[in-house]
Image 1 (tube, rainbow, N blue to C red):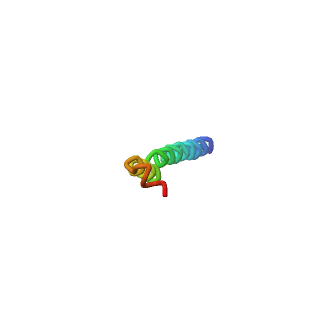
Image 2: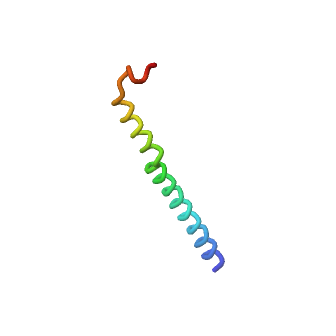
Image 3: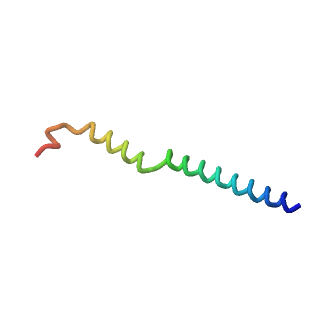
Length: 54
C-alpha cells in the first residue's frame, strides 16, 4: 500500500514538472517583447537614411 502511494506522488510530481516545462516553452513562443521588436523592425524599414543621419 505504501509503495502505491509513493508511486502516485512521484507520478503526480513528474506530470506537474512536464506541464510546467511545457507552459514555460509556450510562454517563450508568445512573448510580447518579440512582437514589439518585430514592429520596431517594420517601422525602421520605412525610414529613409537621410532622416536617420543628422
